[in-house]
Amino acid sequence: MATDSTGSAATPRVLRQDDWDKWYDTLVRGFGGVPEAAEERELWNSLTEFDRSLGVWDGAECVGTAGAFGFRLTVPGGASVPAAGVTMVSVAATHRRRGVLTSMMRRQLDDVRAWGEPLAVLTASEPAIYGRFGYGAATFHLNAEIDTSRVRLSSLPAGTDEVRVRYADPTEVLDVCEAVYARLVPSRPGMLARQPGWERLGVLDPESGREGASPLQCVLAERDGETVGYARYRVKPGWEVAGPEGTVMLKDSAALDPAADAALWRFLFGIDLTSKLSMYGRPVDDAWQYLVSDIRRCQPRLRDSLYVRPVEVGAALQARTYQAPVDVVFEVEDAFCPWNAGRWRLSGDAKGASCERTADPADIALSVRELGAVYLGGVSLSALAAAGRVREVRRGAVAEASLGFGADVAPWLPHGF
Ligand SMILES: CC(=O)SCCNC(=O)CCNC(=O)[C@H](O)C(C)(C)COP(=O)(O)OP(=O)(O)OC[C@H]1O[C@@H](n2cnc3c(N)ncnc32)[C@H](O)[C@@H]1OP(=O)(O)O
Image 1 (tube, helix red, strand yellow):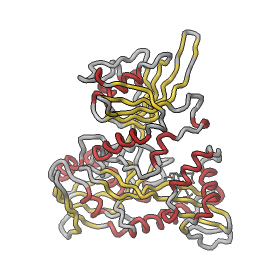
Image 2: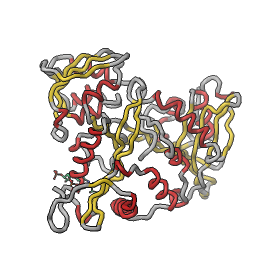
Image 3: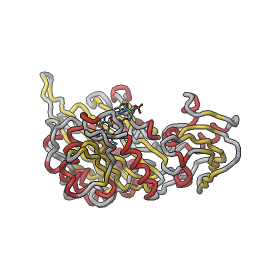
Image 4: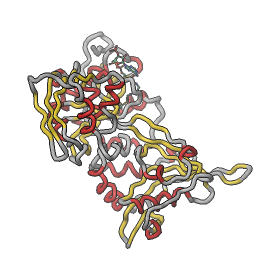
């Protein structure tokens, strides 16, 4: 139970406009206390959804913060599903481990349910925090540091030479880049339909965030005058005894087809005076991996990215489709949101699904956290069963369901929040 300094219960309450500065200062201090640049702070202020944000107060002092953006998330099959994007979570170090986070998670998940949103999602500062609240790691992303002095791109797709790459001012071409991004959103589970204002995150470029590199640069990929891709990056020059060793630091890129994508990679691999291309937060099936001469010298590394929490199990499971027919009864354990606990029959295929309560015997037993982990198709039910985290009750049920839950495109969260 959260308590204030007098020992009485401290209840999360909805954020008011004039709370924001104190509330946000608590959050910044919770993350170490390094002040953000004015433009960054201003952006997060403008994106804060006040009536979906919570604070815990000890007298006049803010000791707990949590928000929940109103996102729409692409799920397997392409539907855009309401999802609460849990964010800005912190508890003052003076009040830690007294249940303040737990009280905020309690209130927040009750609210999300009342708002009718079947999913809650987040990225975690530490993976150990959110499992107890029913969040499972559902997507992973790829980081890499490519030695572009040694690694070559080969077998580029037909049409790569027809794509023109040209410099553009990142802010001036923001709308064109957003249009490319928006066309990609339905095609990959985990992507977020960017609401107005969120496009500014892509060009946020405070000097404090550059780590000695250049301001943000942007190139557009064009074919027949149409924009078919973009890349935004910085260059960090490096001058070593043996010669120039600059680094291209990719922020993001997107392309509508393989040739446009390859043209952008060829550009990024070939910038003069650089010998390294570093990238963070790419899809695990990013195409460049299949074009390089030496994947080992690219140093690919995986990291957990989006955590998914089914808030309404039935609504969540029937919002997506299944790439192979599935007809299984899940016995779901959910101590934190008991309205989900019990047996659910999921019947679905590539066209649609239904998920209803049932009294039929269970085929598969698992907790809501595992259901969240497999929800976007990036983690397999079979793998969790092999780890002992999913229990097969009816022989063959895990293999059948695992196939159906899979996705032919790796799910991916395009940016943090
Ligand atoms: C979506 C996001 O915004 S992610 C950002 C999360 N915020 C941060 O990392 C900022 C720095 N950390 C903090 O502000 C706090 O330590 C928080 C928010 C992580 C935890 O807040 P607290 O109020 O201390 O958590 P609370 O007391 O409710 O703990 C609940 C349980 O989680 C456990 N727990 C809390 N934090 C952690 C952690 N970092 N690692 C592992 N376990 C944790 C507690 O031990 C407790 O376990 P128990 O029920 O078995 O006793």
